[in-house]
Image 1 (spheres, rainbow, N blue to C red):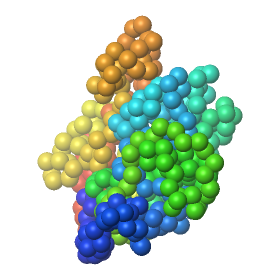
Image 2 (tube, rainbow, N blue to C red):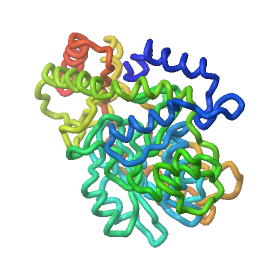
Image 3 (cartoon, rainbow, N blue to C red):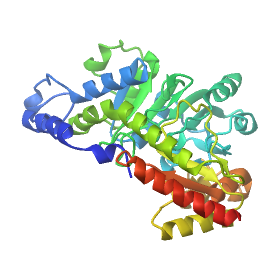
Length: 403
């Protein structure tokens, strides 16, 4: 059912063998501090720069690490607020908390991405930026998001973890905003098991990202690309290993072919389903730019969606999302406002909890969409006959439910 994980094979093995035989698993030097002649981490970064059309890419140990690195590069810290969609993965919220800032939750629209109008509603004098999450292969509506953010003097960070290969108005997602991140976790479009990347075209943000990921250091390899201008500061260790990078170098070139195949399969699925009065499909802000690996439709009611999913499952068709994303208001760390430092954190200034803005009832549209959705996953190894069969079952069960 997946994408990159389904294609792991000989190319990854060849690259990994080269790393092991070299004895240099660390990107900056090998055995006895010997310099590395061929760094897979550097190669993966150059591949990503060409693929996304950005000036700089920096490999990280995970997508979550990439978020913390990007936030650190942007200078986010205690007292700051960052707007993000309530419908988002764990890391989107927790990375903001980890750098000491306060996540401010916002509604999604029918694209299941951040509603651009929410920026004006949720902005405060403490707001520093907006985290846009391109959910499951469909980019957020970046033009109005960028316009609203700029109107309020905010930066924009793209979380492109789930949408590598998508585009928005002809540009790769991850190349539109000030800075962006990728994830190469097992279930992502590109997988290295764990791994991630930060992308930007700003020399300043690149240097700060490199320092944030490498204990405040700025090594010669990076200084050759753009000279050091920022003072050293306290960073963490989020470096990408040569083993991770070796797999990324095998995976990244496959993305265009995967996207072409999966979009063709999705189109065959939609032809089989045909017109179905009474349902609505997920809104795609740029229909030419989504990946196509997971389509969503909305039934008129939650009960009808539940019934269709259950009957389709009984016929061997699973209609649940490929990801474990759900509303942040349902997560335990939000319900308890808990952090690793008990009794401290960005939410302790609220006298009562859950405070407005962190309760399920504060996001009626998001919860309504989530309860009525049906997800139709498509994997890169699917055949046309597979998606035709899925489409037939789904069409029959929807028509049965709607009478």
